[in-house]
Length: 365
Image (cartoon, rainbow, N blue to C red; front, side, top):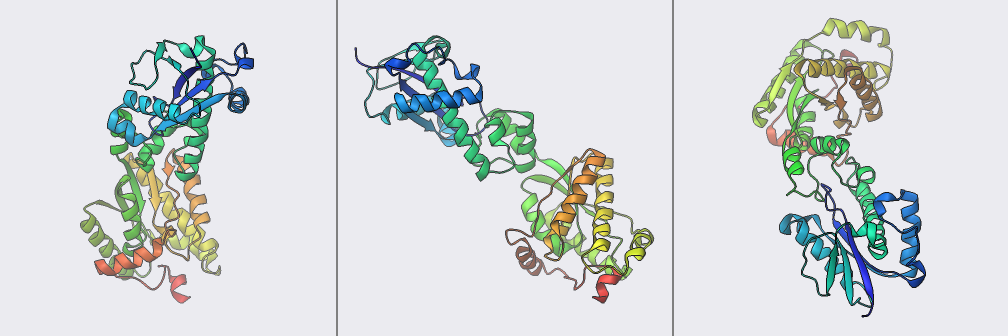
């Protein structure tokens, strides 16, 4: 009858990543091994050990179908594509296949479907191990390419962490857009309250965030002096809000409170502890407003400036978020030419760009 191969797949159910199939012809010395069984019943360490043994001693093939092929063809047809590619990759083709499950496929080799075959047939168990470990390794690589989604942890499956990441980051190019949870979560934008220090800094930040969040701007800057300068910058932010057709909330001009905290630090150099206090105060008020409005996420445009230390902004933002049970979007918006882009957009929008940070002490520098 020739060689018989076991066939199984990994990754039918995840929201992201490929479906992977493996085709394995067990080596004679492994056929009676009690260690080879359904991959789901093995620890990650044991799966890895058996994966290496199977690949070094057995004939095998591995194939995959991409998220795009899953979206275009459906998961069953995409699984068939992956199985065909696994067979094609083998140097010596088997003459018969034992395939896990009960689906009907159009395959180039005669086969028999076996329900729960990965628990009953050693060669199918071996294929389940190869497909599972290979796909897990692939998703760890995707975690490096698409940081923030947690692919190394959940391998693309639908977990709470994955859902939160989808809401925060949007749909990536390896997500299966035809899957209902991805459609529903990925297209529903979470609300974010964005602290805006000035209109020029907000331009490139809004460009990045609007595709991922339902953004409302919040203008709270009691550091800006004199009040005429405060009102001028506020007017430019109002102009930007109209251009983007997004909401704008107004913070109180608490100049007295700001001076109370700042005067004891007036001798500090620009960019040091006085500025850190200023970041924290503005982020604190933003978090309080977000909590009041029922908005889970908040962030700030402060990090666009090359003169502001992102580490200090991030430290304050995360600490304050923890105090109020919120999420701080800790992005360094100056990166990827964020500041350069803000200059370009400010010019195109004809926005007023100030020549000092805002407070009376920065004006003297």
